[in-house]
Amino acid sequence: MKISRIYITGFMGSGKSTLGPIVANTIGWNSYDIDSEIEKRTGMKVTEIFKSKGEKFFRELESSILDEHSKELEVVVSLGGGTIAYNNNFDIIKKTGVLVYLKSSPEKIFLRLKHKTDRPLFQTIDNLVLSDEEALQKIKRLLSEREKYYRNADIIIDIDGISVGRTVDRLVRELKKKFQMVN
Ligand code: S3P
Image 1 (tube, rainbow, N blue to C red):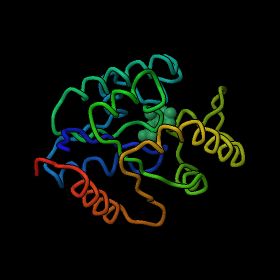
Image 2 (image 1 turned 180 degrees about the vertical axis):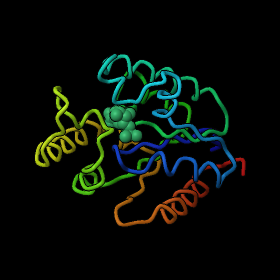
Image 3 (image 1 turned 60 degrees about the horizontal axis):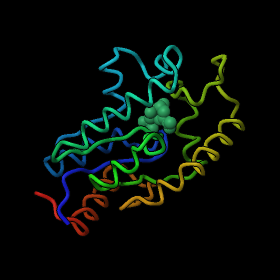
């Protein structure tokens, strides 16, 4: 099957934004990062958007940017961790491209996110960072809610304990084995 779009999903902190441009560069395609585009277009950080405009506003913008890219050719799109779970995003993704899931365990995700303060879903309403136990529980809950989308990815790559370079190699090899790409 010939493909024109690769979508990268995975939980927050799984390396989607790092990997997307490297994969795109390797196969000679363009790359986009939905969160960065939201920030560019609004001139606001994702955390600020959640705070001042609310999650619904963020999700609408996220869906419309995804919709735009789903009409372009030869693109690698790094999704936000939640993109697949809102509106009709999952259907758009599955109809227009190949979905890659960067899979990680809740414990590893927790360690990667522990010191980051730019993930609004890991702050309480009054802006306090969740306790370790609360954060781990929230990761487990969100992962299990999103599992039904993640497990339907066309390619699932286990990232725990594997370097970015080796993950890219594996992914590009899998893509070339399963799909026909321009390069
Ligand atoms: C979110 C993940 C974030 C960002 C927003 C919501 C989520 O993206 O879109 O904070 O719902 O999981 P990353 O996965 O790139 O951190």
